Length: 639
Image (cartoon, rainbow, N blue to C red; front, top):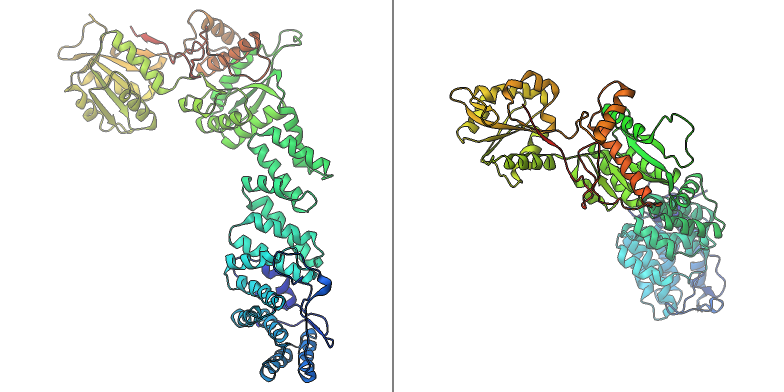
């Protein structure tokens, strides 16, 4: 019948679980040494030489007594302990210590009683007994006290002291139960101290030693959790290099290191680790096998495969569809006849506007399809995630997002879509070229309006006044009146084209009237020129408010009716889709053309795309040295 602790938990269960449970320590297991003969062996499996020095465990120090009554009293205490009669054993040990205070066997009684106190959770009482043994004149006896003193230190929560004491015994304990106790305690104390490397090494030794089966199984489970969920990538790499290849922990550390390397895009490391695992006969699971296959394929690019990541479902679906149309026209898909052997292939993945899906799509296109370059995504969050992953995998990515910070992600990230700052800069440059110097800014209080205002504030043509109105436009008159007193000659507007149908007439009504030089203006009105970014105008606005827009400067990134490459795209697009192309189609069309031009110039692997000036359907005119568009827009004057 197993004995029980004070809370009714069987002692054997406590013995199995305590060292690996965190953070609160629990009672230590009771170890039951064998019976006593006339000569009492203190060693119990420990090589009891000086710490750190190999010891011959066949010549363990012996404690003897000439007092047969004392020997009998201690033997009866041991027999009661072995039988699980803890109360009787405690009584016998206490009687021995009381009746034979100077007997040579006293350390044996102190150790026996101390182990009972430990098992009952009376750590302080136990440690006093162990400490007394640790001060014995015989170094071997003292070492036995230090061993159990180290266990008690852990149970008291003094982990660093426990580790300092117990690590001296590693490799020197012969008894399987005591060795298991030692290694489990070191593992638990190391985890409490945040030393996951030390815990893994202790558990590795515990599984590899001749430990009780229950200890080994528990250690395997804990080891797997630490290596899969708790260690950092750096710790996993350290353990992969440091652990013995013959131990049970090394394959787990190697698998974790391989997964981390794959996540970091270090595919050479994945291949190296997988090769070593195979050399040691470790079977790979399906996930790691797939990673290994992808790592092997990723190093080589297929020059015929161009990857595409676009939002084809979700909120950005319309923009994604327009971009895909442009790509299909550029690639000649569908082909009108038999495809050429070296014809490019588009492999398209739907990002759904989700950053995680965009990043996974980059992985798929690079490692599975071996794409030589990738185009997309469009929305900012997905584009950033894709750019970060493409940088790790060292694959060229031409993003269709206007986010100008994406180029800073890495040297293989490119952008053709204009951003607000570049567009405003070119509008203001056109204004300066016409002699306009007194700039006013009027924007809606929205992310877009604030971006336009910020771009103007950072430009060379600094505004003399800047005014903001709420999105409900109730304070529009007050916002415009803040401008009129400053007598501007140009007004930069930042709102949607739909709202401009209200804002533009309101400006004219308050006396800021847009007109070309020499054109008449109403009596009492100030002649100004409106500056409209591309998002602020549309054909509907130009039709509805034409009489208020004389001489206005319009940012027009894409004009489907222009000559040259634009005209070619416009004609082909209308013939296939029955409508004029939009900016997303033109930018995607240009991105494909840039990749193919690099290949025609000799690029056969994943390389940086050259900064070059070239005719384009969109406004970019190729890539700048900073890997953005050379131009953001074309500025036209409205009449």
